[in-house]
Length: 127
Image 1 (spheres, rainbow, N blue to C red):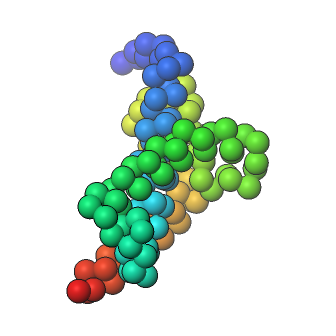
Image 2 (cartoon, rainbow, N blue to C red):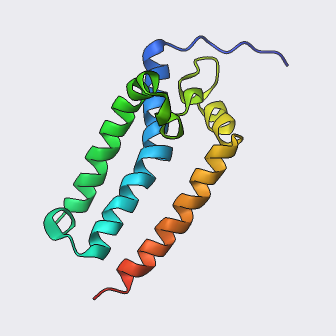
């Protein structure tokens, strides 16, 4: 069955790219940073009620907002930006599938998983 997908609006494509950048690249980075701050005892951010959640949410939001611009200006940000998230020819699930097949994405996912697991264990063992 050959069906043509309805054209996607530029706003919807940007929103999808923003959401995917936040979820798969920004959130693990800043959640790790919050756990490191907690583990080191830096209570300025993570000691307050909801402080860590607010830090992670704001940092993730700004990461998703500014990373496409930074990546176009500075090529060294290539690991923090996935151009396939902003490809208007792909569906939402197609963008995720394309990103997962890239070798660097596998390295990012595995390293995030291991680091978050290690840090969560350390934080959970603190009294």
